[in-house]
Amino acid sequence: MANETIHVAEDVLEQYVIAAFRRVGTSEPSLQAATRAMMHASRVGVDNHGVRLTHHYCQMLKGGRLNKKPQLTIEQKGPSSATVDGDDGLGHYAAYRAMELACDLARETGMAGVGVRRSSHLGAAGAYALAGAEQGFMSFATTNTDSMVPLFGGATAFHGTNPLAFAAPLAGQKPWLLDMATSSIPMNRVLLYRSLGKELPGGVAADRSGVPTTNAHEAEMVLPLGGADYSYKGAALAGVATLLSAILMGTTLDPDFIPMVGAKDISTPRNMGHFVFAINPDHFAGRAGFDAGMTHYIDSLRNAPAREGQEVMAPGDREWREAERRKVEGIPVDPDTADFLKI
Image 1 (cartoon, rainbow, N blue to C red):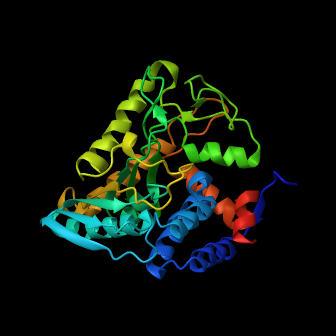
Image 2: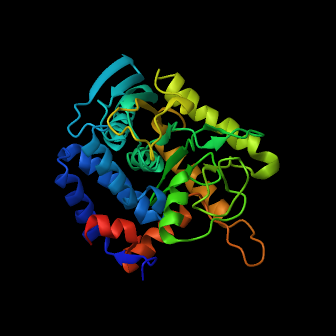
């Protein structure tokens, strides 16, 4: 059926994605980073930032907006600060390099922040926070994006969906992981629902006049996190991402971006900024104390009383559970993506 997904084994799907990037001449470091980040998202159920974006990235690579063979450069600003110049390539490549560098610096200094400039869309910010946690660091990653979210009380788009992602290592278990948009949902989920022919939940999107809608084809904006009465919280948190990723880095502000999708110009780079941060527990309570504290905290959280019919979970539990399920059942791929990847 036209609107049905198919399920593909992880390793098989990964090779289809790699092949698509190779067909347009993408460098190996770039395509490996993009594939790694998208497969993470598809694996844990964040399908709006998963392999479905391969088509978009390939279009931008062919159009010239994205550099197929970027040469990353690093400028260290101090013992615990640095910038990565993404050379207008795929944002995943620059973001992974930034987190790697932040961890390297934090091993010596205790904590480090690394910014990225001249970059592009990086997909799921949680992929980079997770990369830091897997190296033993408490980690943070954020980016600002093009305007598609109105302000609290606003009628037009101002901020992007501007994610905030945090992760922490958990001894003997998958990391604690929070990856959240500061909007009600990411705009890519609207695009995914269009592809699937599904109706959106209420209160998450608006049409071009700012009126809430559940029709994915009418949706022009997504609403800030927090619901009708408290969306000032999501709108303010979106500003945190803009402060760190754009203003701190001297890159593009949300309203000034060329739109990620729908723009006629696909040859001009967007000069997107990102920011990552790594904290080394060895420099604070010490590794043994940190591990014991995390284990006790998560055990207490998971064993906290739950309401009838509900389950208490730590951030990341749902994602790791979904990853295990998809490892067995395969990763769902929407019809448009399956067609592009030639599955």
